[in-house]
Amino acid sequence: MKLGLPYPEIVRQVIAIAGMLPGARQLTYVVDATGVGRPVVDLLRQEVGNVAPIVPVVFTAGDAVRYEDGFYRVPKKDLVHNVMVLLQTGKLRIAERSEDSRALVSELTNMRIKISSNEHTAYEAWRQGQQDDLVFALSLACWRARRSSSSWGTDSC
Image 1: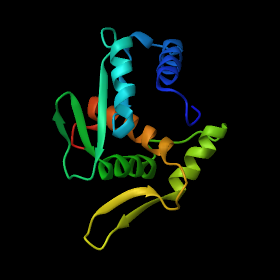
Image 2 (image 1 turned 120 degrees about the vertical axis):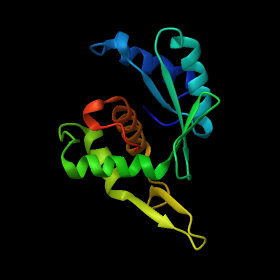
Image 3 (image 1 turned 30 degrees about the vertical axis):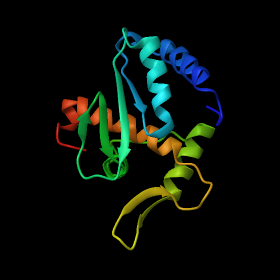
């Protein structure tokens, strides 16, 4: 979706796209609830909360996944490392057919781990102004799949 799209329009588009997917009735919405993502979570809860589960996730700099007040708090490192492992083991492959695929590969290539002088670790695009939205959207999907799939194990991300 284009940057700057109003939240109600984002929600309408997400619901429309989800409704076209096979197995749409069994979908779970995993949503970035960090910062400005909370209004999107609230709108989704209003629109589909009685029909489909919504899993709001707040990205943290912590060391463990926690569940508080209806929100999962997941360390960014867990999200990024999970995708790295899935890619390296071949459990996740990226199709090369679309513009979105190329954008995702570009974001993955530009992702850097930064360690500050006080040993704080940050996971972000290495240059100011670059996007990392696709990386974290993929990370959320992989995190949820790993937590809900017995074939991938039930260990923490």
